[in-house]
Length: 383
Image (cartoon, rainbow, N blue to C red; front, side):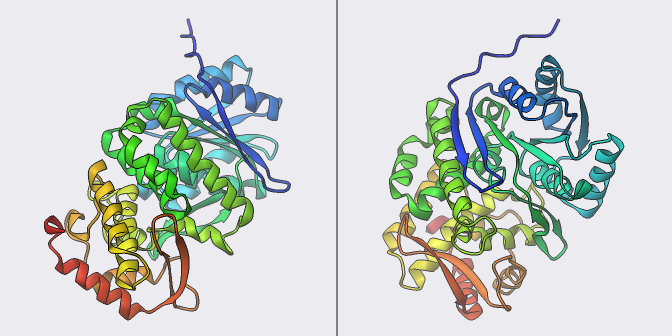
């Protein structure tokens, strides 16, 4: 006998207003069966391919599939390996072949059930399969719920850098079931929190204030968690609606990411050393300290950002990268493949204060190198 699905909690709906490609983000606890009902209404008679990974699948795929079955939706499960290494040419090819073998057609749907890796890989496959099929994001990590599942960026990594091969392909629906986050490890949850606090640092100082007070309740899973996810999604949805293809202020969402992506590349995307959210946390602290060094931001704000990350249990210095972050020259060289580079010149997201971030074009590599050398010379414990 099928176990009844848990009763869904209150649902928050955040619209993403894109002309001809608008969709909703549904946020709340126990939303999997709501997802199935929405899919049935959106695509009556469609088949579904559920793409997940070897860790998430056993935890959450059976419940989703039971809900799809209740709605009379035919489905196939496709499982990919967990971890950042899955965002590769080989796994992309294998997934496309598996979707074709499942006879997924243009009127069918692909569901990405997993974290950012599954979402990015699945979205890219959906973008090119039969020249584009619809897909649904059901993110299972905090990081994916507040960031990568929203906005249509899809892709895989290259030996030259992260997310350098991909496409813009908006989902048809995003279901952020915050109860799924209960299964995350403390490390994974805290890593995702870096992307939450980022929204306060970009342009919402009141949200940063709120996060300083309520971060532990977000982890505990009360209404504060749903609120934090909703605020983050609203912020990202508003930016995406203004600048879908990152030709303007959508680049603000990359606050801290130029440093972060370089660190991920230098640690070979080894999650035992550094996961994306941890790299972002270091990147956020570095962005504020770099802004301070350039005379843009007060030292008080830079210290406040680092202290909050420290309080949550996130890294905020290069010394906290297990096995070392590399030399200043290696870090700057790794930045050379950042997506924001224009004609070989670095672009950073810097800040004039908390909630006052801006896009800085043409930052001299020499200034970045000198800053990183100074950071590497500082004892992280003494900061």
